[in-house]
Length: 428
Image (tube, rainbow, N blue to C red):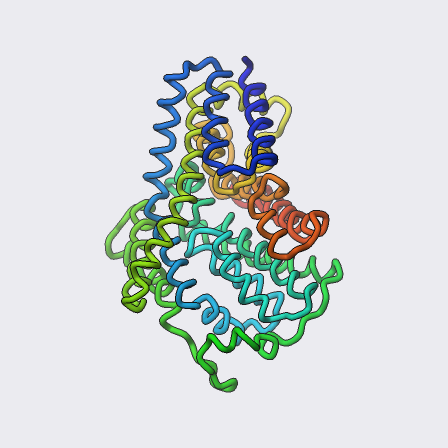
C-alpha cells in the first residue's frame, strides 16, 4: 500500500479510537504502530521488534527527566508549595489574568508536564476569583500559558526530541534565548486576545487571593513581601546546575538535561519533611510512569513509520505540492489532530523528519518552531487537556473551543509566522 495512504488510515483509526474510547494513548499508539506496519508491508514480527526498539529509545531519553519532574510536582503538591510560589509571584504580577498565565507558563517547564502544572493551579486560581466567569478565564489562561512554554522551551519533553534530532550542534542557551522571549510574547498576545474578546475585568490580585488560600500560606507583610525559599529550592537548584553542568563538568546536552533534573528532584527530597518523602516519591512515580508509557507509545509508532521507508517516499511526495518550509508544520498539525498530545507529536515528527531533505533545507531553530506551531493548531476532542479544562471549568464544548482551542491556535499561527521570518530573514 502507498505509505501516505497507510499513514492517513492509521491516523484516522487513532482519532476514532481516541474520541470514542478515550483509552490510554499508549494503547492507541501501539495499535496504530501495528496497523501501519502491516499496511506498509512489514511482517508482524518485524513490526513488533521496531515497536520495542522505538519504545526503548524514548524511555532512555525521557525516563529520568519525566520521573524527576513528576517527583518535584508531587512534593510541591503535598506541601502546598505551588500556592506559596503563586503567592510570591503575585507581589510582582498583580493582574490576575497575567498571574494565571505566567504561573502556568513557569510551572510547566521544571515539572515537565503542562497538564500537571494546570492541575496544581486549579485550586489556587479558584481562590482568586469567586465569580464563575472570571475564575474560568483564569483557568483558561493558566492552561494556555502552560502549553505555550511547554511546546517552546528547552528542556521539556515536547522540545527535547526535536532539539536532539534537529539541533545537535546548536547551543541550548542560544535556542532558549529565542524561545523564552517568544513564548512570553505569545502569552502576552493571548492575554490581549482575551481582553479583546470581552474578558470580564478582575479585581486586584493581592486583595482577591483571600479566603482558604491565605489560610495555607505564611502571613507576609504587604510592604515587605516574603519569599518562600523552600518552595523555590528545586527550581533554584536546577538553575544553578545548568552552568555547573555546562561550564565546569563539560556535559553534553543529554547529560545536562538529566543531571539538572536529578539535582532538582534531589533538592525537593532533601528539603521536604521526612514523613512525606516516601509518599511523595511514590505518588510522583505513579504519575510519571503514566506519562512515560504514553510517550513510549509515540516512540514506537514513530520508529515503525521511519523504518517502513516513509521518510524517503512520502515526504518526497509532500514536497511536490507543499513548500518545504511548511512540511514540518503540516505533519505536526496532522499528528496533533489525530492523537492530541504535543509530546507525542514532537516524538513522531522528530523520528519522521530526522535525516530527510526537510532537515537539510531548514535551519534547526525555525524547524523546531515549525513543529511546535503545528502541534498547537488543532487542540480539540482528541486532546486530553481539552476535556480536563472542560471538566474543571464546567463550560460547554463550544465555550472551551472559544477560550482554549482558539487561543492555542492563535499561538500556533504566531509561532509559525516567527519561524518563517527567522528562516528567511535571519538564518539565510
